[in-house]
Length: 512
Ligand code: ATP
Image (tube, rainbow, N blue to C red):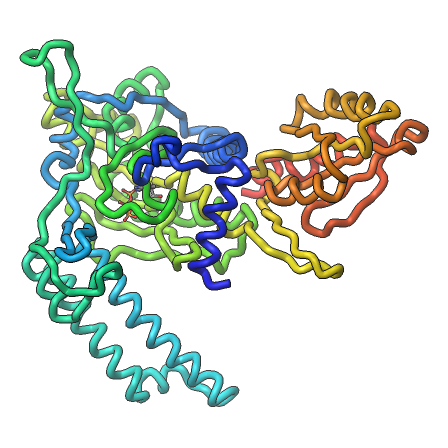
């Protein structure tokens, strides 16, 4: 199966098993808006809990808040979003499809890189042990030709980006014959800036109503509460404020399932520090956040840092943590050193003094900020796309299994009476009653045991517990493990401890 096909199968699987539904589906859906179903919401909550506890429980100097989606419109002027939260859009006149001009160029560059890497791999195979990659890259004519093309386009693109030269974006697209994937033509409109914020109005009368925005990030809710939290929590620098909440962006291109949504959820943490210490903290948070990811157990090789070449005017360091999604390495989380830009701007726009009196320094200053910002939905997609597997079994059948890391799995254990009679359902219910306070469990008595195992595999349940006739006599049940499919007899009294060992989120947190 190609990665493309895998992605389509995954989207269908998510719907079939109650993870993710297109929003408003009975009205044919709403573009780039998705609802979480009965399984999806559990997975999402577990991810949020892992993040929240890692931030607020493991760090005594980080506290959480929950600020509103609606905020004073001046906030978005101060933050720069009204003026500059734009994407460059371009339309194909034949297909009438809309694209981000920067993404078209970046994808084109990505393809050249792929070609170069393929050449290198061919060389590696051909020369075996004696292969010298650096020399190959410096001398192979195919690599040299592609590299020259890459450097030329990349150079022009960066210049255009720095100068905000939209006409040059279009020219790069035309000169390189970058076509619309739908129409296959190069018949493009001019490139225009498009503001990504959703607007609505607040107030009951037309005259009195004011335009407000749905927040495009949760971070500003933290900045404008900085003084409240610092004072009431008697927080001393360095300290952090964490928040999980919805954000809204009117994305131009929204064709990648929950990777790019118009309504999504973010987990952000702003860490307030003394000016001059920001690069040290930036490094620390880079390491911490990578550790949080790798600790989940989805393979360190599937993550990488992508340091920003072009920094926003307010940032003095920035990196992305990228994950290997089915469509390649893409941003999962951003880590930015934002200086005192945001607090400084709110100070200026609100007229309120936003400072910290440092008792050790005996002086007041506007704190600097290092932020970590991750999309909950992209995390859900990372977990699901990594976990989906189609396995060939010894008997020739194929089983679909979601090998979701056990502490994040929506359902931890399924309790299954072998048959629907002879007192087995009653005993199974007793097992449920014992386990349900600690774990999200599912009781199922319909269909053959084999079919029930398959259904649990498909939603990623780590343990299936089967109650059979012998259980009535010896008080033991059969426990089947999802990944190995191995089975063992376990006394009912020991079930809780056995399941807990593997699924308890605290064990993940202890490794951080
Ligand atoms: P991209 O370059 O992919 O548009 P971004 O750099 O604009 O992302 P940030 O503003 O840094 O993203 O937002 C922080 C995080 O929020 C991202 O790393 C991502 O996980 C998540 N995120 C941003 N936009 C979306 C979206 N439209 N849908 C889902 N998650 C998103």
